[in-house]
Length: 509
Image (cartoon, rainbow, N blue to C red; front, side, top):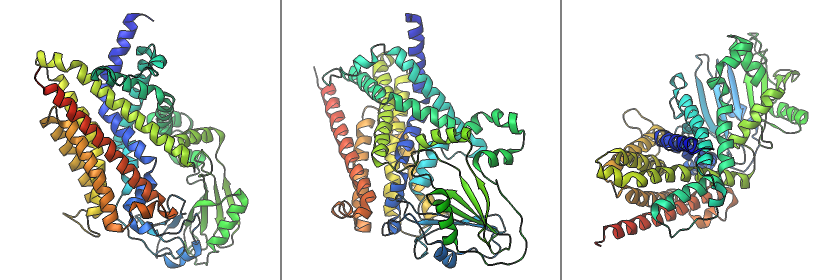
């Protein structure tokens, strides 16, 4: 492997990181948080904290209390889980609009809705589409970042010939620039298999967007056929009879499905409710396995007879297994924490790569009056600490905004999102205007906002750490608070270290 090739790889690695690093950090940061998106939901939705820890709703009670409205074409309920203890009901009216509500799984009591998007509806979608849905622009940008990440991983291994030896030679006493490179190498090597797995699996999940030709070659323009055969979507259908009829007990049909599979369904949908041709679709739960299976049963809602069974085909099973590895929707708390730690290692790799690039060029760019280092530093501060500040502002806004508030036609949930984007924009502005101090000041802001979020949670809900850590039903809340406090301590220590370094640098020789 000659020096010319290695130099080319170095150039690719450096400039790919500079150009795509900001986007990659946002994707990795949101993906890391999404490992615990349901726990973030619980923290941001206090009304759900007192719900029973059950994985089965009383479907007949939900049907009675919140049954389909007149003219509904379908009615569905998503079962509660260990991580999401509320039942979600969705109805599609005759106008085609879908209405969603959250309910107590046993009593059917309606929970406050529209108050927050939380982790599962804001942070998680940000991870894979950046909330840019038009023409799948966000998904394409994420895919481009993923391909670039793979190129950077390969080039990084080529550049660091002694990559595994260097992993064991980290020396904290070295010069800052060399120390940054070593942190970059150690974080990258420690999580290298995870980075490859998570990047490749992310691309595989959206194969239909990135490689549409594979679908068209076999199915042509018959997209519904592809959806039916690969995912069971619309696999069984029949029209309305336009005659009223009384449906079977949904609890009974649930028990029939559980006996058929050996485990219960997590999603139940009634098509043409109240009609003689009504039928019930039940999707198999997948939290006990890695793959996100799409197995489904279809029952006649009136007679209870099994009409059709869909079983995921082998090729789709392989794709859904890879998707399951990426999204970690199965029950495994130790592995979930490992994903979280490795995600943070990815964030550290990107952040230290940014910082090393700036530090290795700062003096030369200043001497030659080039703006490159200044621009990349502002970009890196806004992308790294800036998005963390924005995320914490999102959490603080959740605890400060009163219930039912609206402004300029925006709901409370939308106002929380506006707080996120405004805080992020201010962080970029601050990074540009406070060169040399931005890293330290934004680390200090992170420490203050994280501590404020924990304090506000206590003040607004009464769930302080002593209570949340001793009550099993509140462990998700306690985990959030402990993680926030750990982040505050780390950010505070970083701010103090940066301040001391700056003071030493400014001391007269």
